[in-house]
Image (cartoon, rainbow, N blue to C red; front, side, top):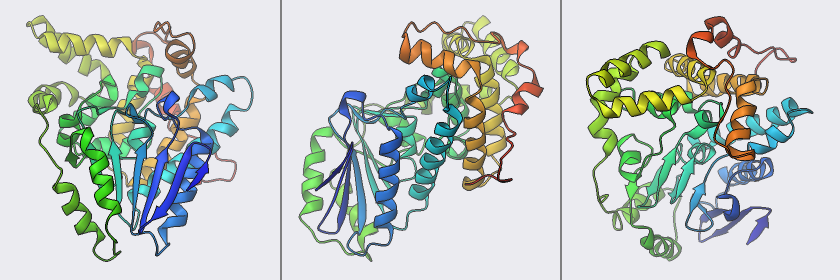
Length: 359
């Protein structure tokens, strides 16, 4: 077994095993971890001794709770742009590699699967959730936007659920993850060791692995204990989040709230507590991403991420949630009406020194 920092990996019986080993930080991904994970996936891509890849997180609390963005906050007065470019460009290349990987990737999505954790699971072929799964794109909480391919995969979800999850950052459970297409199988978490044992007891052939791996997991598959709440909310979500302007989404929710709809009132309040700039940029991001290829979505996101490194709200959001932890961000501008379309548009243009986007 090879231990490279917080990424543990080895090959046994034609299976490439990877464990994200940073449980004290809920397996949050540092730049070094992203580099190593990407490197291992690339090495195994054309390795005939690896039939498929199995990815899990150390401990029972998280696959991965996201990228380690606090480092970006700490570098805000120095070389944040250079670090951010290396961090995000490597992370997005790794994400794209997983979406297009020539071999099956099994991901065990137990516990927190958030942000960067979604990025390393959404493109896998065999995605397992459990009773402990808590899935979210929480970037709105820190004045950012849903990256790691969110422009692409959030648009693939039923109706306007992708917009709803992006703009509210609400966490969902296993049944919801299955409903939106972010997972494939549900098991009880106490069955995971048995699945790993069953995987280790057989010799896998590259030709038959896709079918046989699915068959093996099916033997352990169960139904979630409760149905998807998102499925029940689908019509309401589509009604409110189908609008193309944030002000119209808020207005739609307000009208329903005045008619006694408590859910609409709750969602309206969640949205109004978020960064007005992030809300408008994210809605435009998802509208733009609807007609883009996966690669073009990641290209757009690299430019967005670098532009956010110059945004007051990103640093204020990280301060409020991860540094001072007072959960009282002071957004600027502080209301949607003050965020002009011209300002939103600036997040979508970036001047590359080399003349073109490197992704």
